[in-house]
Length: 262
Ligand code: 0L1
Ligand code: MG
Image (cartoon, rainbow, N blue to C red; front, side, top):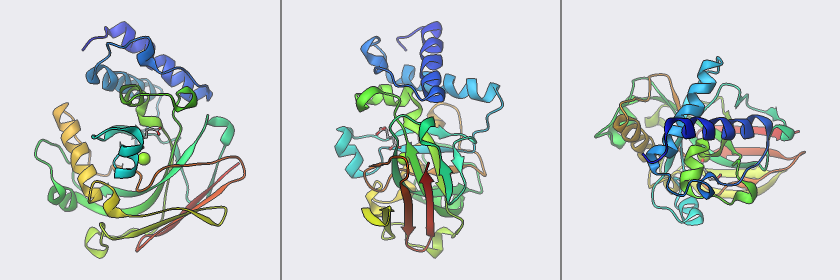
């Protein structure tokens, strides 16, 4: 690690305030170019600690930058990992207030809910499928706190991988009732198709992203707990939204999920 505890706490407070006040900022590596990956995750962990201390619940974890399209867009080869909050979880068909966000984008996700805890090292697709209770369709609203999306991956990790809101559908399916690789995904904005994909766009199989997350948290002495939901990552590129937009996602075998920006 290159940053001391006080700097990590200061950066976490700054990024969390930007999130809570819907205020943007310059990327933190501008002032701290020496920052390493452990620092980036330590800042994210400190944001999480601050929220837990205030009574926020963390219903799940997320993998980000898992689709080949998004990795190409960001020029990276590895996913990143973050967490989702109770106040960020919106009911299916619910409203999301645009004035609580900076420059939101929406992406389609396949969401896993675990019946058994998962902890790396050594997790693979099989471990994930065996530990999964059911899968659901989901929308993730990402909202990078960085001005004009000028960021690098370490800054994004520190900023809890741009996590902002998520919506999950109500149709649940066991993993053997759907084909997670070939399942089609169609996302519409105001009735127009804006993104199309298939489960395999997420690292060849969305369970791979969950296995990578389990190996990531395992390397840090943690686990994905039983009952947690895991957002396996955007199947397509994220789509920008504005006040008045309605998003509807259809995932083959998993029904629909939607939200409206007000
Ligand atoms: O969920 C994700 O794929 C994280 C994306 C982080 C970068 C961005 O805000 O576009
Ligand atoms: Mg995502």
